Amino acid sequence: MYCVLRAGQLDDEYRRKLHDVDRAAGTQCPHRILPSGSCARSDNDQPHGVGGGERHYLDTFGRVRALVFGHFGEFNDGLLGLANDISVSIAHQHHRKLGFKSKEGGLARAKAGVMRRLSMTALRSTARHVLRGLAIVGPSCIHQRNAREAARRAHLDAFGANRGAPWRDPTNGG
Image (tube, rainbow, N blue to C red):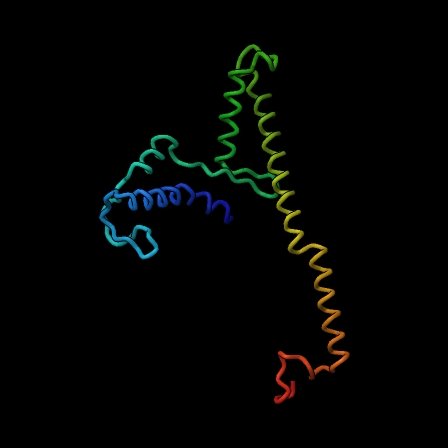
């Protein structure tokens, strides 16, 4: 759920950062500047000034489409739309090599190839994420915890339950 919310904020965040850079470069804006260097967005109802960097971004790239996939192979609408656009382009360019007379005939085969590649990329990324997470919660952490627990028990065996532990106050009984 967080990924979907984050995906919706991505383009606005890029534009905000470009606006702050443009403003630092001298673009006029009717809003005040915060101590962090960012433009105050809600101090009045006037529109923000659009500088060269933000205008170039909008003219060249348009809105950023966030591509999101989940642990179980689900894709968001932006990623499915991109896969469809790529499939149409591949079918238009390579339908003869794929063994079809028209691009409409090669569309299904092109889409299957694109979806297979996207699925493998998503699975590799998910596996990489899980394997990197094992360093945080995996066997090595279990061994470290067991070693700490053994050291704590040895300390309690040597000094007793209420003596020698710096986090305990012996004046109040433990």
